[in-house]
Image (tube, rainbow, N blue to C red):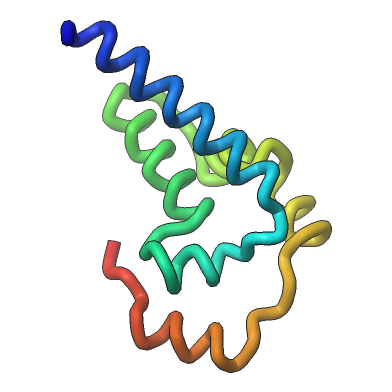
Length: 98
């Protein structure tokens, strides 16, 4: 596989992942963190880091809007539930260091 095709496939997979996460508003970030070690915020941070590596100036709010499909505060108000004590305890136990 040539480099351009690989990049195009990876970009398509990223877009599909983002669309999937946007449609699964029932899945809380803390659950993603507890099960997979990353969440939508991690993904947006990685996006911001990649932009910076390319010399692009992107702030956290811009990166989050790309991942969430709306301003982060709007998403939180519409979809984010208060984490349970069990969710918080699991997060503290398994918190990734990235």
